[in-house]
Amino acid sequence: MRDLRWTDIEALSALETELFPADAWLAKTWWSELAGRPRRCYLVEEDESGALAGYAGVDLAGEVADIMTLAVAPSAQGRGVGRRLLEGLVERAAADHAAYVMLEVRADNEPARRLYGARGFGVLNVRRRYYQPGDVDALVMRLALGGVA
Picture 1 (spheres, rainbow, N blue to C red):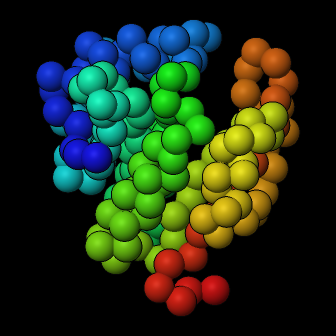
Picture 2 (cartoon, rainbow, N blue to C red):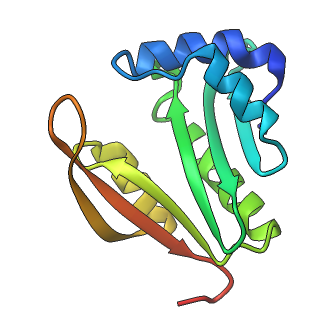
């Protein structure tokens, strides 16, 4: 796992389009996210061949850190990539003295919900019909850091 580099943007955009065809972030969005450093932190993990296996990002905004995205290439799913990326984001948030890490996840994304739940995230709220098209609810989840309840 390592920090995202500008040289990753082409592969990142291609993977994003494969995973989220209806609402993929464009290359210009990734450039904007990179320009948001150090507040925006993005991590990538490569597979054995050097191909992008997954990526994740967090907005380090003080007391509350917001996970912006976390995605794993289909060929790398089920290999712990998502868990490692999530842990990397949580570690960055803790190092930035965040009290909480927040995220939104599609209610119908069971693998992601299991991943977040296993790490200790709990559901705070439901945003009804948040994801469009499809009228899919968003679950707002939170993890307390450093003994915060």
